Image 1 (tube, rainbow, N blue to C red):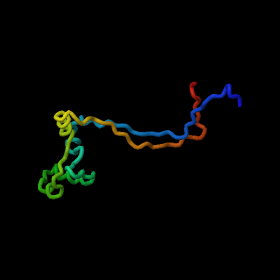
Image 2: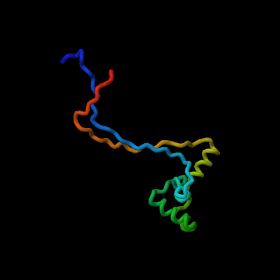
Image 3: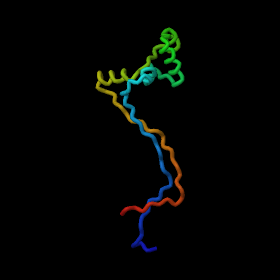
Image 4: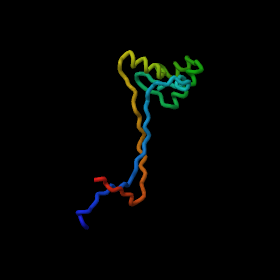
Length: 115
């Protein structure tokens, strides 16, 4: 092998794909008025299944059932979070990334390095 003319290569074995989304608390859509960011108390957060039951009762105004099944838990909506941000000058928007899905590329995929 002639090392004088050797060219470095970048060999690709896997490609990672992920999703990126911003969580900005801006929307006032009907959906987000019906379904909160979460339902929680100081001691716990409801699961998605529990939150669905809670919100069905909440939207039907079944407050006594809510108090019995979910004592001290409250829904928190986008506008609640925005008021908290303004009052306390804390809490910001954030970015959420999915897990990476790794895909194996065909053998022999090589790219010459530009230097």
